[in-house]
Amino acid sequence: MIIKSNQDEILNYLTDASNFQGECETLYIPENEEELILLVKSLYHSDKKFTISGAGTGLTGGRVPKGGVVISTEKLNKIIEINLQENFAIVQAGVYLSNFLSELKSIGYFYPPDPTEKNCFIGGTIANNASGAKTFKYGSTRNFVLELKIILPDGDTLQLKRGNYFAKDYHLNIKTDSDKEIQIEIPQINLPTTKNAAGYYLQPNMDAIDLFIGSEGTLGIISTAKLKIFPLPEKIISAVCFFENEIDAIKFIDEAREFSYRTRKEKLINKIDALALEFFDKYSLRFLQEDFPKISPSANGAVWFEQEANSSNEEILIEQWLKLIFKHNSSDEFVWFASNEKERKEIEEFRHAISWKVNEFISNKNLRKLGTDVAVPDCEMISFYNFLINKMKSSNLNYVLYGHLGNSHFHLNILPKDEYEYSEGKKIYKEICDKAIQLKGTISAEHGIGKIKREYLIDMFGVDIVNKMKEIKFKFDPKNLLNRGNIFLDDD
Ligand SMILES: Cc1cc2nc3c(=O)[nH]c(=O)nc-3n(C[C@H](O)[C@H](O)[C@H](O)COP(=O)(O)OP(=O)(O)OC[C@H]3O[C@@H](n4cnc5c(N)ncnc54)[C@H](O)[C@@H]3O)c2cc1C
Image 1 (tube, rainbow, N blue to C red):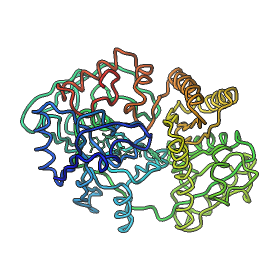
Image 2 (tube, rainbow, N blue to C red; image 1 turned 90 degrees about the vertical axis):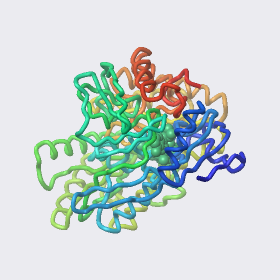
Image 3 (tube, helix red, strand yellow; image 1 turned 30 degrees about the vertical axis):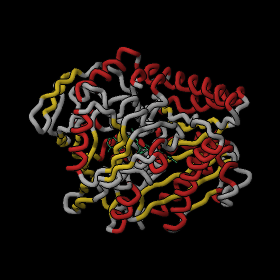
Image 4 (spheres, rainbow, N blue to C red; image 1 turned 45 degrees about the vertical axis):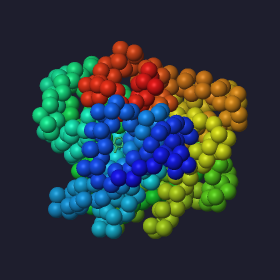
C-alpha cells in the first residue's frame, strides 16, 4: 500500500476536470484488492470518511474529497481476462478505458462505451454510467456491465451478476458475501426516457446490479467488472459535414436520427443507421478553427456522423448520407470524410478538443465549469435548441454549444470572463435545467451529480424522492462515510 500525507504529493487528487477543489488528510493507494478491503474495514471501524478516486476526469467534483482520506484505485489496473469465445472481458476498476480499448483493438474487438475523454478508469465510467458518441447506437455503460464485484463501506463484499438478483415489484433484497441481508424499498419515480445519469437508477423489478451502476461511488467501491465486448466492424464511415446555417445542422441530425430509428425498427439493410451524431455550433467551430484548418471558414454549424459498414455497402451508404447532406443545404465539398484510420482519429481529436478547450479556458480563469449536461426527449430537441439560443442571445454571455445531439443531449458551456459573469451564467444554467425538467428530460445525461449539481437533482425529483434515495445509501453506508457529499446536499 502506498500512503502519502505530504500535501504537495496529494494536490492532484484534490480536484477533477471541473476544477472543483477539496481537501484531505491522507491518500491511500492499495496495490491489490486484499489491501483495499483491509483498508476499508479499518476506516469503517475508525469512523473515517473516505472518497474514491478514479482518473479524475469527472466533471462534477465526484472524486474531490471534503475532508477524510482518499483511496485511489490506480493500482487496481489489471485486465484479468479477455474471452473471445464468449465475448467478455474481466477488468479491475483502475484500468484506463484508453488502454482497454487499445488492447481490444489489437485483437479486432471493441467495447462500446466511449466518453469523449478516454483517459478515465473503467471504475469511474461504471460509477457514472458514462456514455459517449456511440451511445446513440449502443446505449450507455449500463448495457455492457455483466458482473461487478463491490466492496461495501464496511469492507464486506458483494458479487452481482446481471440476471441473478431482481427486485420483486418495489422490494429489493441483496445478500452480501458474509450473508448479511440488505432490504431496500424502491421509491416510485418517473425516470426520464432520455439517457440519464442523475440520481440512482430505480425501477420496479429491476436488476440489483443496475442500482450500483451510476451510483457515483456512494453505495460501494467497484473493484472488478465483467464487461461485454464485440468484434470490430469491418469499416466505419466517419465524416464531419459543415453547414452555413446552424439550424440546418440541427435538422440534419433530426432526420438522420429518424432514418436510423426506422432502419433499426424495421430491420432494414444498407440504410442509414448512425453510430454517432454529434453537433458543433458556430462558436465551437471558431474556438477550434486555429487547430483544425479543415474547418471551413464559412461554416456556422457542423455534424460529425459515423456508421458501421462493410466493403459491399460502404458506397451505397455514403450515397444516402450525401443525399441527406444536400437536402439540408450542405454539399459534398463541405464534408470532411475520413478515408483512413489516421483521419478518423483526427476527427475524434476534433471532437475531444472542444470539450478539452472549454475546460482549459475555465481553469485558466480559475472559475468553475458552467457546462450543461441536459438531455430532452427527441421530439423536443429543436424547440429546446431554439430556447437555448434565445436565452444566450439575450444574456450577452459568451458560450459554445455542442453535444451528443443524436441523443438530444446538449453541452452548452457558458464562458464567463469574470466572477460577475459567472454568477449571471449560473442563473441561466438553472433556467436551462428547469426547462429540461419541464420537458421531461434530465439535468444530467452523463456526468452525474457529484458535488456541484445536487440542488438541481432536488429540482428534478423533489425532496421526497431524493430523501428516499438517501435512505438507500444509508442501508449500505449507515455511518455515511463513503463518497460523502456526492449526490446528497446536506452531507458536507
Ligand atoms: C474533456 C472531457 C470530456 C468528457 N466527455 C465525457 C463523455 O462524453 N461522456 C461521459 O459520460 N463523461 C465524459 N466526461 C466525464 C468523465 O470522463 C467521466 O465521467 C468518467 O467516467 C470519469 O471517470 P474517472 O475515472 O476519471 O472518474 P473520477 O473523476 O476519478 O471519479 C468520478 C466519480 O466516480 C467515482 N468512482 C471512481 N472510481 C470508482 C470505483 N472504482 N468505485 C466506485 N466509485 C468510483 C468517484 O468517487 C467519483 O464520484 C468527460 C470529461 C472530460 C474532461
